[in-house]
Image 1 (cartoon, rainbow over the protein chains, first blue to last red):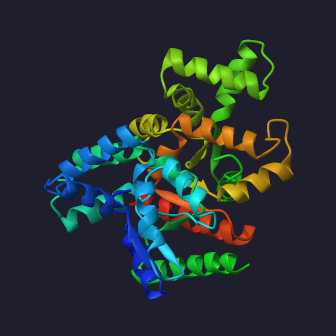
Image 2 (image 1 turned 90 degrees about the horizontal axis):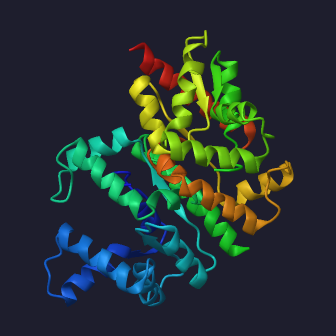
Length: 176
Length: 176
């Protein structure tokens, strides 16, 4: 969910030698191809249009070549938003593990506010609407079906340690 | 989600002196009123019918008198399944805190299988269908918006300690 702080997983994964694929990049590339400014409005529209014309898992599919061309043995994909995407990834990468990051709405709101990026919310109602938009594409269903949920409420170092432990566990499973 | 082991929260809450209200009891009472056997099929039908005729938060509303008549100062409600219910409760009990319990689908499946109650699933497909039914009423959205998510994968005592800590934190907030 917005403001849950999923970048903390990406950071730890980088430290552990993972390659990173950001799902949003597939949409940004489509914006570039269409010579549209990559602002949140255009990106949102492109995403909806792609999902309509090429199916719910379109962004996942566009990430396959990005994953294949990575050279490291471990890859993390940032930005899964629905069960359709999870299933699409699992079909092609059966060893996939699926991690969600969770913070309370209150914590997420205060983070989004302090951050104040151009696409961050101006107030609670806007924030709430954005939450509902994310849920409407199926993000809640994906979170409920995650293999791991990391609570990101504590101090940064404690959360990072939890992420490390989970990545270790996943890597051990890969080795078996 | 089915098999996530939410009863662990109820157990710890009982130890800490909470009164318990089980949302499913409201449906079982309706079955009794209608002189129907309280099997999963009838209970499922009654729930859908009540939601259609009295709105998505009908079961939450039917729990209000049950909560009011409790004598202890702390009450836990077991069985919230959608954001509409959360909002309904919050309107009437603004100090409400909202806890979700999470386990991986794999863990939940093995638990549901070992338990083998009459309404437990016979195989993965049936289990998966039941998951999707729960998500279709909005359970995933509720989980994504929870204030706390407790991962129930570790040893029982470790999870119980996490629950105790969260209940302590919630009670501290109530005191303020």
